[in-house]
Length: 312
Length: 312
Image 1 (cartoon, rainbow over the protein chains, first blue to last red):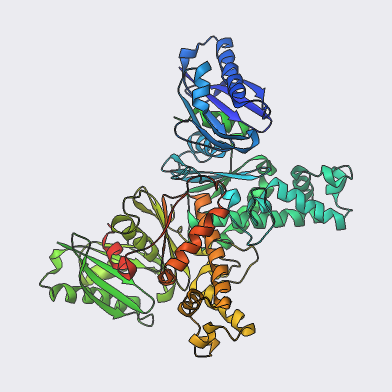
Image 2 (cartoon, each protein chain N blue to C red):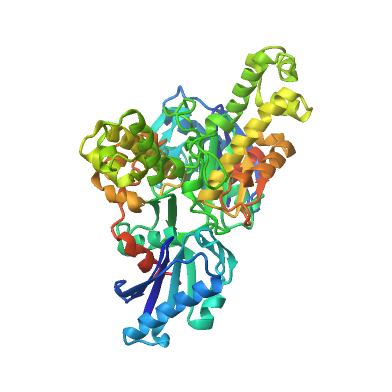
């Protein structure tokens, strides 16, 4: 028996066969197609899995279950309540999926499954509680309590990115103002860098972007900061300060055993981790007490597939 | 066998005998004396309990255990790690207490024990998870998960009042800026009212305070708002907006089964509850989904004694 993990992303849907040691033994992918009817998109996913399984000498009956991580929320009954980038609302995923592939299907939020994977075989393995913060275009989070995903009583929790960090602050795509992800995501780094190079065109951030502010990405900013470009260092320090306050908010309220930072921005590595470690405790109320250590995620993008396979 | 609940407040320490039906059958109090050495203060507490027990025809051996709610944090070993208003740091409470009264002693944060009491015999009875927010001079919170107090892995959680709601906002006593309790506590209402009457001396807030802005309290503001004083209504609306965002932050991140509002400001009643209910969902990310209902606490100040007795 094998488990299947599916990671539904904005541009691609990754599918993997996961063995009992939580290793991906075979992998395939299809393109995310928000333009398709959900019935068709789900059929393509199920067929991709079937074909992957068969090309590895296995059959449908060898699949213990299929776990799916989505950038949205799902019900325990296998309905995708909301998945913005696919434009799905109350899509009966399990029902549609089982028309093609009749094995148990479990769905959960993508940050939650990454949090689960890290807590079982990743950096937070051995902890009973952790909060995984994924720093990408936006900010997601996954809460693990007593070894299990906690997505809230109504399944709408774990949305750290849309907690308010700045009263009456910057407008967010969600319709509110001052959401945390406006201040410490890749998008925030890019915005602050563009503002900074407008008055400091000498910054190496701009040269890395070929002189075009529209081509600035978070990687250029962190690279420039690591190379001691003063403008980049200032932008990065602001980002670290905001992220540290976000981490402190999690600690002041929930105080998990460990905080894990993942997502694209976490590839910045030591400059990010050292920055947060040096600063976040300042914003903790009981700042002279033991508090959660902060670590970088170690499973990388595979956490999505592996964690999804761990569902159920 | 009876249980003893102790509620350590800023001005008084309330002691109660609690029966198996979670009712307070006898009560006494002593004055909080931060000026005393902790050994003496703890001795007075133990003696107050002994005398209360004896005057009710009971003996030390009839005490099953003593639970103590403190405005601070304590270790599972019975050490008060920090209790600011008593000036206590790492005080070996259980050890000192047991010199006078040798029965099991359990300690926890006062908002936590109130949350526990409400979740067992109060408004949130029957829920498995809830967050109790106490609106007083500051803001405290108690988290109940799977029927138990969750004060965090390191015991420093539940400090909703010191999560940051306003980046680079108003300075807080804790040394940081923009803490949530600067915006939706009684202190915040008073501050906003004083600012408002400075330019609107015609407000009935000021007449209720005898014309003296220094005498304004949260009660005068909520009363004036209920009586449709325009200035008070505006101050109260701002307070409701901030509190709604605080509630939404809890829901976006943790999504408990229920939110409970307690503390002095919650005496405002319907005007508070209706305001939050009408507004908080706007700040929830999945705002078209079922979300936690908001209710007022029902146990009143006795929750402190009853909840403390429920410890252990």
